[in-house]
Structures are given as C-alpha cells and as structure tokens.
Image (tube, rainbow, N blue to C red; front, side, top):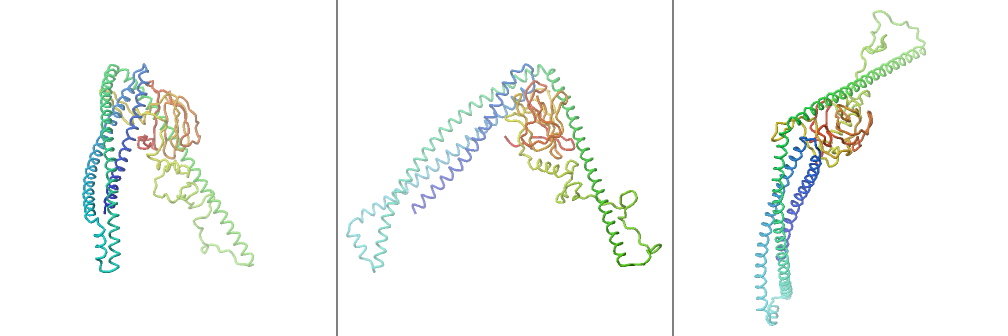
Length: 478
C-alpha cells in the first residue's frame, strides 16, 4: 500500500515536471528566435543610418523592430505565467507531500507502538502456539515476517518522501528566483520598446520633412516595378508560345507517324491478300460497279493524310502526359513530363521552399504597403529582403533559367518551374545564363543595391498567367 501510494505520487509529480519542461523549452526557443531577429534588425538599422540617402526602409526596419520587441515581451509574459503556474503546482505538490508524509509518520508511529507493546517473546510464542493447526501456525509466522517488513517499508517510504519533499522545495526556490530574473528581463525589454517607439517617432518626423524626396524614390520604384512586370510578362508569354509550338510540332509528328504506320499496315495487308490470291490460283474477276465495297474511313487520300486521323490523347507520346492526371487543368508549360514534374514539385513544396538569401530581413512585404505616421505608400510584387551587398542569392527550387540580364537598370534572373516562375531582382552580378538547368540552392548571383541605396533583393513568384503570388506562404518559416 505504501509503495503504491509513493509510486503514484512520484509519477504525478514527474509527469507535471516533464509537461512544464516541454512548454518552457518551446518558449525558450521562441525567445531565442525573436532575440536573433532583433539582433539582425539592430545591425541592419545601424547600416541604414550610415546611408546619407534617406529612405523609408529605415522606418520599415524600426517598425519590424517594434513588432519583434512586442512579440518578445509577449513571449516573456507567457513565460512568467508559465512560471506562476509551475510555482503554484509545486506549492500544491509540496502541500500534498507534507500531508502524505504526516500520514505515513502517524501510521508508522502506530505500528511502532504496537510492536513495542507486543515485544516480549512470551507474546510471540503465545501467538504461534495458539494456532489451531500446523498450517495456521506457518501462516502466523509469515504474517509476523511480513509485518516486520511492512514497518521497514514504511520507514523507507518516509525517508524517500522527505527527500522528494526537499527536492521539490529546492525546485520551488529555483522557480521563484527564475521568475524574478524573468521579470527583470521583461522590465528591460519594456524600456527598450519605449525607446524603439520614440525612435520610430523621430524617424517619422524626419521622413515627414522629406516626403517630396521619398515620394520621388517611391515613384521611381513604381516606374521600375512596372517595367520589370512588363518584361516578366513578355518572357512568360514567350515561354508559353514556345511551349505551344513544341506541342504542335509533336502533335503533327505524332499524326504523321500514325499516317505512315497506317499506310504501312494497309500496304502489308494488300500484299498479303494478293499473295493469298495468287497462291489459290483464283481466276475470279474483280468486283466492280454497284457491288463494290466503299472505301473505309481510314483510306489514305491524295494529300497524304487520312479522312479521320487519330486524335492525341492524354496518353499520346506527343504530350507525354500520364492518364493518371486526367482531372488536372494543364498549362502548355506542363505538356512535357519534365514540366509537369517541376510544377508538381513546386506545388508540393508550398510552405517549405528555402529562402533565396541567408539571414535576410523582410523590409517590404507583398502588395501595397503604407507607413504609419506618413502618407507614403508603395506597391511590391514580391518581398524586399534586406541583406548585405554581395550576399549570395540562391534558387529556391529546381528549374530552368529563362531570363538573366538587365531590366530597368537592374539585374534580374527569372527561373521557370513548370508553370511557375521565380524572380530575383536587384542583383549586382549574375552567375547563370538563359536555358541553364538549375537546382534548388544554385547560386544565381550576388545581391546589389536598390533605388533607395540600401542592400537587398526583391524575390517574386508568378504563375503562367503572369499573376504575382505572395511568396510568404510558399517559403518555410525561419
């Protein structure tokens, strides 16, 4: 009974410790991730301050800093709540242990008193010899032994319970110290958050005084964005037209092959019939006039084709598409097994695509962006990622380079992934060429400087309709 009670108590306590440890570990990982992002943002912000050319990127970075700082404060709040809950549970466990320990001591004291009152050898012998039979006497001997062992078990359980109680008290003391330390960190982060907000107000005030200059930057970026969009659309249309031409050539070749095969089969059949006729020595005249059979639908006509040529299907070698995908709406860019495979791989990796640069910070998101405290607004067809100038820019998936060169005074690389395209803009140098096959992780070039004078790249994702996609849901979490 005592062993079972002690075991259940230990299991409950250990289960609570493991669950709390897992929650605390998740919170610690989240905190470390946010702290790392804050360190990168601080470094990036210091770099932008060196630039004499004012840009809205400074405001975007400090806004990201505030968001990250608020997330860190919220994470610390959750950690404090977790510690409060842990302290409460530990205090409850300590109360339960003390109560259980008191009960064990009372029961043990009663057993000791009972043993003391019946300590004489006469009482022991009298208990044995009063047995009605030999078997009964043996049972009484076994009972006395088990009673003695039970007292020893009680004593051991009391010692273990006391040790567990002291250990739990030590854990509680550490929890309280950790809570105080966490509250100090929280206070510091709240002060830093206030400083970040003050800094944001200062940047906003500075930007308001230079809105004309910034509006010009934004207009220049918008003009450049439109030129890049037009160029990308032209490349995508070109790829689709080339794919259609290839498909048509394959279809015509398949039809020509089918016609030749049919002609060969008809010739072979005619030769066999003639040979059979000659072998039989037939003298019958050929049937002509009204009794003649009409030509079949597959009779070869003078133009070299047939009346009803075979139509290509999903299994047609001209398309190379398996019949297992009949329900899919195909793009001309998926008409080959390679194109279909790249499309499906790209789609299946949604949410898991690697980032095109290492340790970059998104300063401008997808779509129309506004800046708090100003009237400034700008549109982005992708993610503007701030990185040091000269950083390696890598392909996010297997594909084929369909454009590598300059557009609107900016180097850009466009990679085809079946019916999807990824674009990499603001490159200082390009390391690939058109029609080159690339793998995920292939270095496409080095990051350069954007119009606002800051280091970074623009990463884009488009489909075969030239519709820009938000890259965030496609990229894996950092």
